[in-house]
Length: 344
Image (cartoon, rainbow, N blue to C red; front, side, top):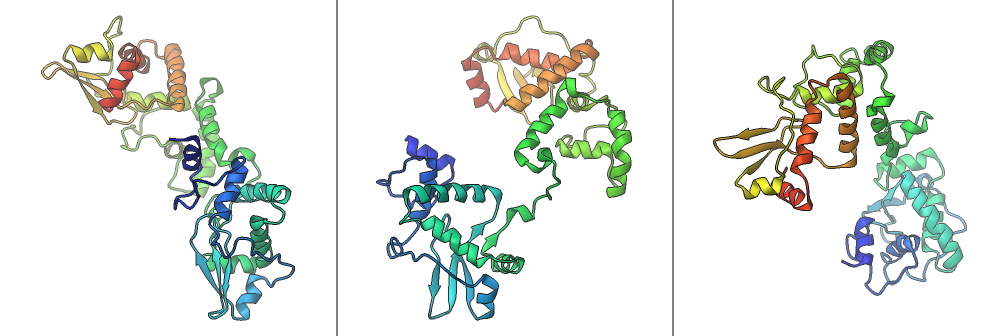
């Protein structure tokens, strides 16, 4: 793998391998321009005509011009077929990311490629083509313009809600122990409003759906929780079978995964979401462990649950015991490799 190939793969460019190996680019913005310019056929390079005046899409359509969408990724090649009266235009993805991308390429082109400003000419063409809501509706109907933001939620003026990239930040903040509000307060505030919007929905159900918890409906309706952190603990504790509740033994010493494996212990991954139930089968010598998702979100989640357990459930600290077990189990890179290999 080369740096060039890694960049192209990471930015999801050049799926059709149109970028020549000999092509050079100064930086990322130049690469984004280049990927568009190299989709142009040879007849088009150097042959663009700057547009001074042009009718909008609605007027062209009313005067008999047909529109045809060309599904050529990153293309800026527009062609009018005189024989058929058809204007062939690449699909245009109308979203915030595309706007930022094109603005940057245009600024770069105007400085470095003023006589070969193909992207600028393409955007100027679109600017003439789309002059009103009618033009937008027509291009959407003809599948020339695809607007992802039409399917998304409306902006409400709150940057935390309007920016998708901040959704995970909000969810993390809601789990932090120091940020917790008693659940009964939230329930009193929001349950009446939720009932108006959807009579079949409750605050409790909405939280569980939004946080993607309890897909297998293991959480009892009678189960109570103090706040979000307590809910995240509860969803794990309620996956425990009855024989395990109250029966955990605190671990003082244990061999790591590699040593256990070398001494004949087998490992089996249990795909039980949110489970903290570890079981050793004496007959088969098999240690059954739930799959563990090792990422930053999981670490934050478990740290907060552990801090909460140590204060409120010191004698039923099931999540703490589970993390202690994992800490003994994973002591080196070898242990990690072994557990990944076994699907744990």
